[in-house]
Image 1 (cartoon, rainbow, N blue to C red):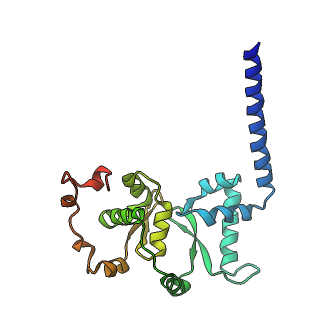
Image 2 (cartoon, one colour):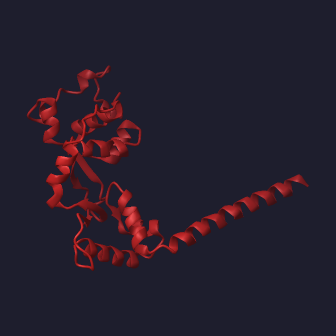
Length: 214
């Protein structure tokens, strides 16, 4: 008698979970599509493909595309309000919010005026991988370090030590490289002046190719 009761309880728990998910989805769909799209765009670190964005906001692809076009017009001041300090661009087959080029100096001054802080060990290791393997994507760096590097990459970008070089034409993944500011900090003229990595490893192998950085 206990086994059927256990099965019934498991069924009820599964049904409750499904109803909870349905309730969350219903609440989500009550929110305007433009708000849902903006919410996702604000948190993505790399351009998000139209299909992936549509799936994230639970809406048809054509409706999401129309919403994106409306947002572009709105941010560019072609709607009812003034132009925004950021813009929505399609890059490498995906969509992402960017600071307008007009404000690059303003943002650079703000970031440069922040109190400098020592880089963490994780940031130093990630920076080393990017320096030696550039151009390299976030996913490739994560694979080499065997950890998630999203927050570290954001820190390095904010500190002006790395920059976005280009988006992969097929995947849309952003490729990163180092900046002149890093060269100034290191006191070198070119990234080619970095010491060879192999002699620094115990076995003399190129650890980055083997996925070893420590």
